[in-house]
Every structure is written in structure tokens, then in C-alpha cells.
Image 1: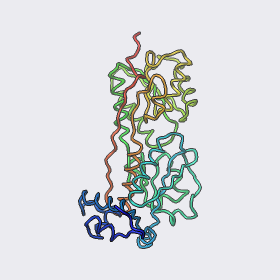
Image 2: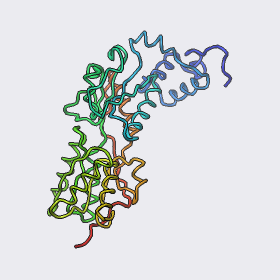
Image 3: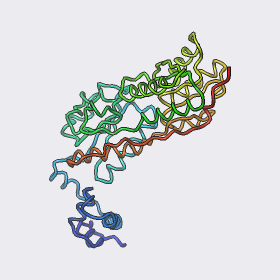
Image 4: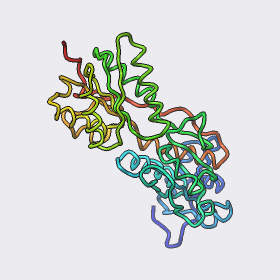
Length: 338
């Protein structure tokens, strides 16, 4: 379709799509569900793309009293996981005419400096990881419409909470290792004070100890390869029977466990099986490739943004946990025989 030399209007889009201007407003404002059909919405979006139509956001924002800007608060960007969360959130935001400002909390914890002179005046809402919740008070994010990621739904600071089904991921890992015959576990736990890691530890211990004849010990480490290597070496050289499976809270911790095992002359998985959680690119870069739980970071970000949009519109957000998937690779096998 040829584009006009003048800037297209919503009326032009309505004529091209064969709908009313009200329908165009609903679709491009993200409020069409339940009011117009999916086919009509797609026709409107297609006409807008063909015409090169861009809504007058300045006028709309003045009318609504919104800046159409969202702050995404995450821990320091040490892995690609939170980059994926940002990608998903920004994609949904763009579809609804919002922008996303990414704000890494220093060292993953607060306090953090206010990125704006007045966060309340500059933002419509905040999406925050529980790992960076300490930054919220300093930036006054807890006084804005707030969606928490990876947070206890019973005690969340936010108007809505979006979680991955990490508990099920831990159950899948534990079931896999128990099914292989492992009974002596080392939990290489992230030394980060957050609900998600506390929940992982509780779920793992509950699942392992429910099986007769099992043992589990815990070693804490910062989320770094060298920190994980040091903690794993100390745990595996401590008195008592050696664990046959190391369950790691994070793929980076698993990489550190690999280094420790090799330094101790142990083989993965012949002597010790190792599992991770995240399914980062690192999981297939190490040898053998890592058995881990795949978390869909982009979908996580998308759901977080959808939840915030629902809060802003006075709608009930989707509260179902996002499914996760155990990916079995070469780092797990039956334990060695006596």
C-alpha cells in the first residue's frame, strides 16, 4: 500500500482496516481484548504498519496523565538471564506504546541511587526482581504501581507477583537424580538473601529427605565460578561420605563445581553428577554439557510487563506460575558403585 506524503491519522487506519476509529483506539491502546475480535485487531495492526501510522503519544499521555515509561529493576547484569527478562518486557511494552528503562541494582542489592530526580513523577510503574528489592525504597519504587518477579506471593511488596515454577523445577531435578539411584547430595546454594533461593533450598531438602536412606549437606557460594569452585572443594574434602550428586542453584555455580571436581581428580558424571538451573549458554559450553532446568527468561519478562499493564488498567493479572523444563544432558548418570 502506498504511503501518504502527510502523516497518517487514526481515521486513515480505520478506513484502511474497515473499522471505526474507536476500534482503532482500542487495538492500538492495547484494550481490545473482549471488545473486538483477534482478526479485527490484526487487521488494524496491519493497516497501521502499512500506513506507517504512529499514535500521538504526547497528546495521549497528557490526557491520561502518564509518561508511558516503566522501570525494570534487576540485579547487576552478571548473566544473560536478566537480559532476556528485559527483552521480553520491552517487546510487550513497545506493543503498547511504553518504554522500559533498565536499572541494575548495584551488586544485586540496595540501596541504589534514584535514577530520576523524582521516580514518581517520571514513571508509570516498576517491575522488580526480588533479588533487587533492596533498591526499591531508595528509588521510591515501592510507592508506584509495582510488579514483583521471583517473589513470595504471600508477602510481596507488589500489586502483582509473577513467578517461574521453580519449585517444580527442583522437583524435576530431584526426581531425576533419585531415579538414577543417587542418595547422597550436596546442595551448592547461592549465597544471596532472596525468596527464590530460600524456596529452592526448602523444596530440595523436603524432596530428598522424603526418600529413605538419603543425606544432603549444603555449601553456600557467591554466584561466581571461583566462589563456587572454592565452596565445592571445601565441601567435597570435608570428613564423611562424599556426595554423588551436586545440585546447583545456578549454571554458573555448576561451572565452578566442574572446576573443583577436576582439581580433585573426579570425573563428571562418572564419579559425581552435577545439575544446574537456568539453561544459560554456559550450560552447553562446558563439557560434558550440563543437565539443568530451562527457564524462559523472555516469557518471564513478557508476563511481568503484561501484569503491570493489567495493574495500570485496573484488571486482574494472570497469577499462574510459568512452567519450567528439565533438560537432561551429559552431566548426570547413576552413582558409582562401591
